[in-house]
Amino acid sequence: MTKRIFIFTIFSILISCSEKQFSFENYSNYPVKFAKKNFVYPNNEFELFLPLNWESKVENYEDVDEIILGIDAISKPDKENFINAISIQKMNPFSSKKDLKSEYNYLIEKIKQKDSFEIIDSGKTDFLEKEAYIIHSKSNSGNYGELEMITIIIKSSSDNNYFYLNASASRTKELNKNMSMMIQCLKTFKQNN
Image (cartoon, rainbow, N blue to C red; front, side, top):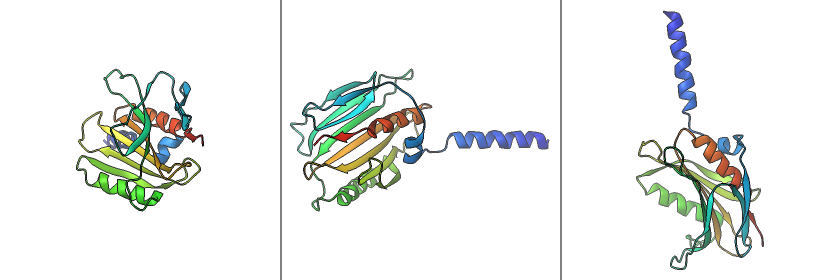
């Protein structure tokens, strides 16, 4: 009887550990190998590596006042038809104070107002070896495949605008691998001016 309880306890621990929420730091340090390709924005504003087999598209934001430029890179659907995406957007400031921390605080408040998302982690980071803030959030629907998102906000080196680097993954059994792969790509982001 005690042997069964011991086995059940070990099994329960293994299951609960495998379902533990990864943090931004866990994703940053999770080892995953994948083929990459270099993407340079057409006006040479920035560049980064993207997964080799992903489709990337320069977006047209002429009708959106807040967004200056950006790209979306999207994975092919997996066996369950879920996708993952990287989005880079250069944005006009939302905050009237025009500093990085105010921009971060503004976005935190916007996310907190949404009932459908919860913040997992947020704060200052040296992820890109310069001042930046992260916001790690997820959908709280409880459905398999719901969205988990990491946003990194950095100041543009050429003007008073901001870059929003986003990694969006479906919360599936491949979440840790997929999010880690995208965070590795975001780590290669470089402004060219």
